Image 1 (cartoon, helix red, strand yellow):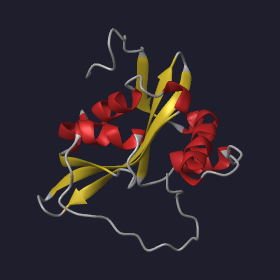
Image 2 (cartoon, rainbow, N blue to C red):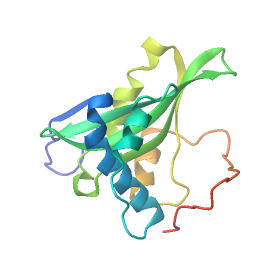
Image 3 (spheres, rainbow, N blue to C red):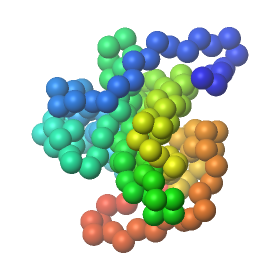
Length: 164
């Protein structure tokens, strides 16, 4: 793991794939993640939605626990890679509770996900990064290189992330 600061000691982080039983712990983090993107009043934790997400047939979620508390997650997909004929990983959302940032937790989750590459036959791991620069984007610039493409979106819902 890359150093996280002068004399800082990396916390003991448990990172594993989340299961249905983790939905109650995941729901408040999803609400906090959405609030960090869209601002405004925080939404109520939605355990039902977290349960649906953890049972989704295409998405998988890694969670990071610190002293038993869920403090971060990565939502990712295992998808075909048409360029290589292999598969690739796509980390669509990475979030760490604001009280636990700058401790190396997000990087540790990306490292654990990258360790899946050989076993899953991934040619690459794509990290979707926020468009606007800021603390969240520094992680992506530290662990990966810019992709050969830009992403565009066709929105079907009128909710857009706030510009920071």
